[in-house]
Length: 184
Ligand SMILES: Nc1ncnc2c1ncn2[C@@H]1O[C@H](COP(=O)(O)OP(=O)(O)OP(=O)(O)O)[C@@H](O)[C@H]1O
Ligand SMILES: O=C(O)C1=C[C@@H](O)[C@@H](O)[C@H](O)C1
Ligand SMILES: [Mg+2]
Image (tube, rainbow, N blue to C red; front, side):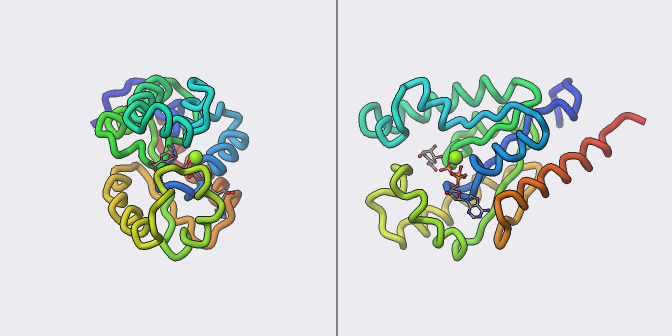
């Protein structure tokens, strides 16, 4: 049941999915195409602490990062007309799942393990959760995280798609959904 009275068209859009699936890259493109503000939750947290995520994990700890993640998402998800990329671990927290699903359109970016593996070198240095883990352990983490992303309004299979193709697909899907929800 939807408890949010704001019109469907004004709802913010939240992108979820495992680290490196492209939430930040694609979210920024979607925001540009729709003339909306883009909010990247990891970047908001980094701005608040004036530190990179790895440094926050090291100096302040993951627990504090997760608390901040919850409060930042809680604030932005209640605002209208935003395109929001959350961190890959955000949906581990029930309160975050709840607030996003209640106020926003949640889109899950899915990617197969085979395709994801090819991208690891691009992200390993800036993702503390991946550091010190073997590839087998990362695959286990990848699979164990899947159920948390199963709560969403829409899923996009991004295998074999360039980031801008995924962004175009999301924009087209949103426009269709907005038209369908238009009062007649
Ligand atoms: N569809 C795509 N095809 C190829 N490369 C991509 C695609 N989407 C993103 N990338 C690349 O993968 C890397 C990770 O992307 P990005 O930072 O957007 O992931 P993310 O989902 O925001 O990760 P995190 O949850 O850790 O914030 C970037 O180098 C980006 O250029
Ligand atoms: O998947 C995760 O647990 C994380 C993903 C990144 O977006 C950051 O939020 C942080 O590195 C943790
Ligand atoms: Mg990101």
